[in-house]
Image 1 (spheres, rainbow, N blue to C red):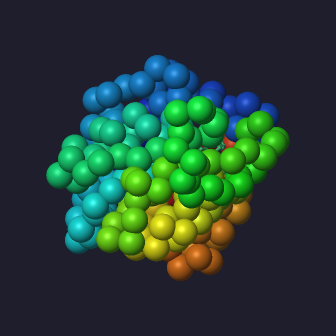
Image 2 (image 1 turned 60 degrees about the vertical axis):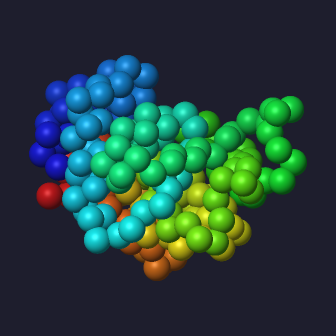
Length: 191
Ligand code: 5GP
């Protein structure tokens, strides 16, 4: 997606050799107009699928998923919670995820009320690095017995193992920008 790639080139900041900071339009300040184009592109790529729910994980996936949902006939967006709360139902699907950016494990949880075996789920997230967050969301979708239409990612770091991890699960993966390298502060795309 050229618009997104241009924005990454103009506003992305490389940290070390493997982290891309995109706080100015995706992870802190959010460019809603760009999110709309992202939503339309996800719809174009999953046009043939009858999606019943979009599943993401807090926090950065939520904004993207909500805007995208408007192009999927306003299907509900469900986000996995990373923190326990006393008001979270005891009946939850749960999965353990390793955080690439924080270097620790955390649990993600979805209330059993909100996904079930009649759902056809589109998983959406901001980044794909080693695929751990997506694996957790796949695990939760499967626990619910739901169908999984595929995974939509805004920025894939193709030099990490996430792509292979998702494809090995026999899951369709659509990434809107694929980065092949962040070496020496330079952003290079796959195509
Ligand atoms: P994974 O689970 O695929 O290893 O990592 C994906 C998650 O880690 C994403 O949800 C995202 O929040 C975070 N992440 C991984 N790499 C980056 C990065 O280079 N930049 C930013 N901003 N987030 C990242």
